[in-house]
Length: 76
Image 1: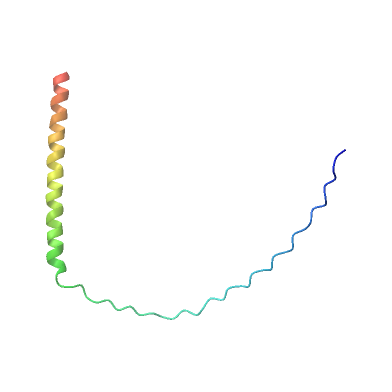
Image 2: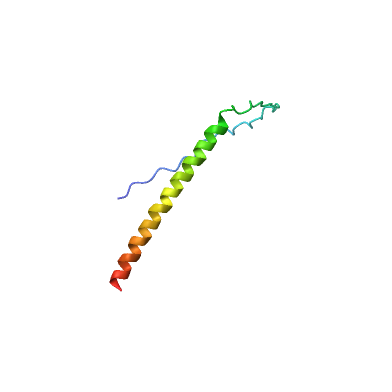
């Protein structure tokens, strides 16, 4: 014999959330100070360093290309 299942009970309805009221927005003024005068020398040093790194990367890529070319010529 099979056991009877009890009837499914309904869940109580959850209360509806109250609508959120947005607070009024106030205007905010932001005053920024001028950049310090030491930025210009620092920026030029950074640019010089980047140029040096880029030059070295190009030298390395050129040397790698020559090595690959020589290896391919040796096989042909």
